[in-house]
Amino acid sequence: MPAALNGLVGYKPAVGAWPAAGVVPACRSIDCVTVFARHVDDAAAVDAAARGWCADDPYSADRPLHRGEQPKTWLLPQGRPEFFGPFAAEYEAAWERAKETIARSGVRVQQVDVSLLQEAAALLYEGPLVAERWSALAGFIEAHPGSTFPVTETILRSGTQAEHTAAALFRAQHRLAEIRRAVRSWLRQAVLVLPTCGGTWTREQVGADPIGTNSKMGLYTNHCNLLDLSALAVPAGQAGPELPFGVTLFALPEEEANLIEAARILLRVQDTIRVAVCGLHMRGMPLEPQMTGLGAVFAEEAQTAPVYRLYKLETDPPKPGLVRTLLGGAPIAVELWDMPVESFGRFTASIPAPLGIGRVELADGRSVPGFVCEAYAAEGTLDITASGGWRNAMAEV
Image (cartoon, rainbow, N blue to C red; front, side, top):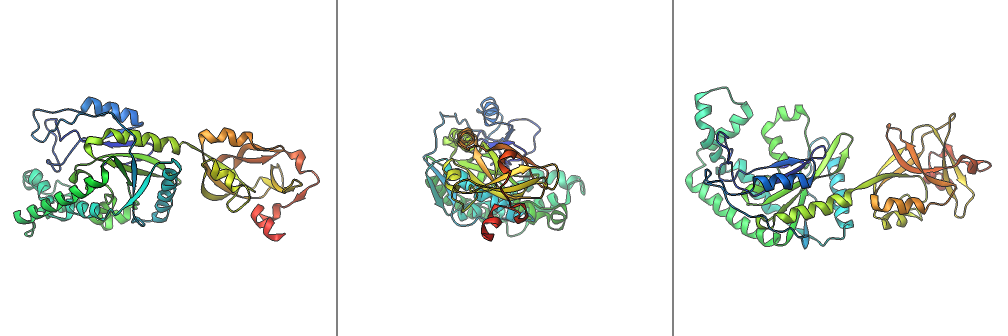
């Protein structure tokens, strides 16, 4: 299924099943082509080349790609999605930021109950549908004992369980048809947005429970093929250092081209610059509305490297002046905000002297644009470095 890692776009178009001879399907009746590319336009170009009916594949379907339109509604899950693994909190925070980004784009948002999707997803590995996987690979596994990865073989052999009868298979297919019809009613002229993954695992956790951990990884994508949907996964920032996060957009196959338009909207509003603020622009301070008015979203609290001193400038109202120094510096508390690129120039131009935007070195080694002060303005003013930051300094007044 699609994944959004290291800037990749994952695109699951509805172009049919496996056309190439010699490819072994996992589930022949629902398998499809997935494209990975650096950019949305690249994925669309590959899709255009691959799309079409294949005479050698009985499951192939000819689905022309219609002109894309912006979806009228963006669907988000009701309540709090499930997050898991050692970075669950970081993934949840990244998801909340992604929702804020969608809201900031100005699109129409509606919430839906996605429990039906998870019911469908469970059938892929936990119900009689897994027998299709066994039907494709049983001959190889039986002829080559021990040659298959043990976890894979365990999953495949689960398709031979006595309860996976033909009657059970038909009951599952009938339920899928009901779910498919309900989901189609939501998705007309809409796009559904879900986390691509709700978390990740350490190698040790996967080794201890390979089936459970892998099943969780597909919590928000395993429904896709079963319900005959198209999907496009795009990056959505970072959950943490070296921990990329992404979201997946789902649409009806006949409205598949709308995914491209939706992705462009999402990626455009995600095109941001991380800015460090140290005073009146922080949360709860008088100039916070200037940040939010420009579409900026709070990202995290941070500290500067211990190479700065902080001064209380004699302005009206008083403002902090962050000055880099060669000696006697200390870490200063700052906030990092993600500001749309298109707003950054306006923001920078609005800042009065002696303040300005320069590079601010953070304690963890990052360097970001942020508020700095010309050194001359600090002469004769109150040095508040010992407070550790503007918020503390104001609380001490």
